[in-house]
Length: 278
Length: 281
Image 1 (tube, each protein chain N blue to C red):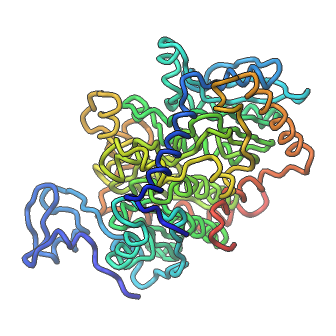
Image 2 (image 1 turned 180 degrees about the vertical axis):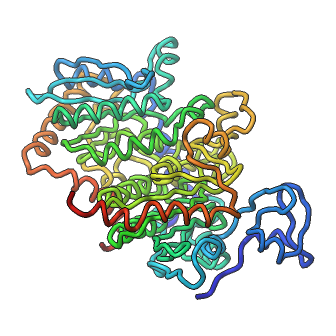
Image 3 (image 1 turned 90 degrees about the vertical axis):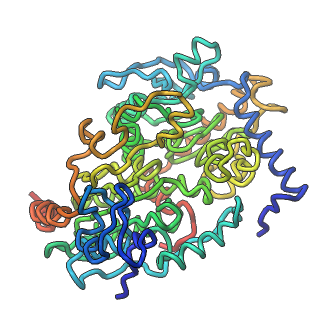
């Protein structure tokens, strides 16, 4: 195993490659969750609210079908126009967003619906109001809700998967990751600020964190990398959906046809790092 | 077993213990006697995992679990220093394999599973080894019907373990499911600080949540919030008292009363409560 030599040319290349990956995942023309929900799923019907007083537009929930199978859907949603970005808060949820997700998991359990989640968030919103209303508690309870969900659960990381905010809808039985998407313990900027006390060294942090999608597959955190059109998903939304839909269908069929046991999901996340024998 | 000194000590000089808040100095024996709570201003100094266990467990009852369980540098991580070197230094300094100490103990005569984070060990951050030791302690507590008491003092994720650190949030919550299935109580105690991935997973899921006075608790740190949003922070933002006022923490408990409060809670909760719940109705 080689440690990157930070001064070397190879390390510079690694930093550039890692950063290019992050930039594609954040491309302003990249398809967002609803763009892919509309192209991959049938008959999507949006539902609203956490039933506790809030309706966070950074998280979208609803019902849909895929290959005739009814589904519950939960997705992080970014905005494309200036106005929509404000409304969606750049895909960063407040506690109400995580409670909205919990409501969806509860609904899915009661109606025996499989869940499909779309992940695309820089992270949970880092603001005063979010903290006042229990951001950490909301995320923790959502982790718990996912691991208690009694029905099959499929997650797909379509863009940014930032920290605990992403984890809130990631703990599925099967995890797909688009080729240029990533999952990270912190944004490269935040990691650089913590590690180097300099957010400007984000490229170096991105390389050190090894956050490219391919690594997630190697480590067993993802089950499959879904290819994107040449250049990235932003070049062709329809083609991106055409590549993704059959993989969602196949994975869902696999989950619903074998004897399903939610305890297996808990076991997956209990043993995920593969370092310790049981 | 050997108990390493509280790491409150590096702040001390030969003449005594200096409070980090009011800067007054006290004889070492007096500081230890008040559990490193300042006798003058009440400031709760951070204490090591070993010191925490010494304060809470009945004398001579602590039996460490998994003393040899350590992780490894999965990413080959180097920032301003190689992660393997950081780990080696922390192990040497804190006399711990990683940032948590777990084991069986009794508190006021009640058997418990006890976990204690060590902030002096890389900020009490969540490594794979910390997550594993925590998960095993939770599972063993469930199996032995021991109420699980966890004192958290943690900055959150350990950046040097990247996404593996993030996944410890999931691992700890998966383990807690077993505790719930066994109807064994979980008492979560939040000490200064309890931030990020730690409070956004296991630490927020206690059946009862206690916190030490003026501990910093929250998902995102104040400095990051200010930088990201330019928001004005309200007075007392993210303190124990702040969260208690918002219904997120059951009680703010002075360290000098913590053992007694735990004793009263445990007397009500278990282990007989767990055994009763395990019996068919």
